[in-house]
Length: 356
Image 1 (spheres, helix red, strand yellow):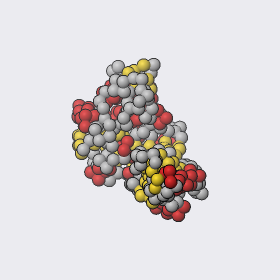
Image 2 (image 1 turned 45 degrees about the horizontal axis):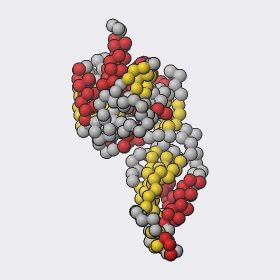
Image 3 (image 1 turned 135 degrees about the vertical axis):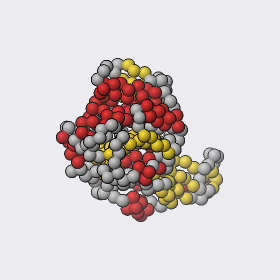
Image 4 (image 1 turned 120 degrees about the vertical axis):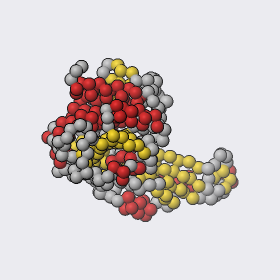
C-alpha cells in the first residue's frame, strides 16, 4: 500500500474506527475533538479549537482568495435499545464497518478530512480550503458550527458532509418546533365537572394531522406537521385536566417563511402556541452554482432533503453531500460500507478538482 491515495483511504478508515470507540454524545464530544485535533496535527495542519469544534486551513492559505468550507460533525445520538452489537466497538465484517456514528456522520467526516489533506499542501489552488469538525449537530446546539462561523472568515460556499449516498442535497427543509398548550378547567372526573383540556387538544391535533399547505415545492414537496409528544400534569386518574401540552414537529419548504406558517397555525387552532426556535430555516443552493454543476458533470443527481443539518445555520451557499445512507442514521447496529468511504473520498476530490 505505497500509493498515497490508498494510504489516505486507509488512514481515514482507521480514524473512523478510533472515533467510533469514543462516546461522543452531543455536548460531550471533547475526546473525539482531541482525537481529530491530534490526527490533523500529525499531518501538520494548523489547528484551532473553540469548544468542541476543530478547524484547520490549507498550508498556503491566502486572504486574497475565496474560501471553500468542508464541514461535518463528530457528535452522535445515544444508541437505541435495539442494538445487538456494542455501539463503541468498531467491527469490520462483510465490507461493513459497524459502530455508533459510523454512518451519521463519521464516514462523511473522515472522507472530508482525507479530501482536505489531499489538497492541503498544494500551492496552486484557486480557493482556500477550511476543514471544520463541528459539535452539537444532532441537537442543533448553540455551541456547534454556529459558534465558529464568524471565526472562519468569509466563506464562498461549503460542502456539508451528511450521508446522501454521494448524491447532491441541493435543498433542505427547515425545522420549526412548537409547544402547544390547550387550556381547560379542572374538575372531578366522576361528577361531570370541569372542561377537559385533552379533548380540546385532540381537536387541534386533528387539524395538524389533516391540514395541507397549498404551496408544494418541486424539490422539497409539501410542508409536513407531526404531533410527537403529548402530556398533562395530572397524576390522578379521577381529575379532569386543566391543561394539555403537545409538541409539533414542522418541516417547512422554501416557499413559506416560518412567520407565515405560524400565522396560519394560529388562525386555525385554539391552543396557545410557543415556538422554540426559528434558526433552522429552509435552505437551497442554485442549480447553476459551480459546485452543483461540477457534481452534475460527475453524474450526481440533485434532490431536496426532508431532514435538517448544519447547512441550515449557514448564510452562504452550501451543498449537503456525503457517503453513507440517511436511512441507516440513528438505526440499531449502525454501519457504513468501507467502499462507500473510499468512493466518497474519490468523488469529493474529483468534484473539487473541477473548481480548484
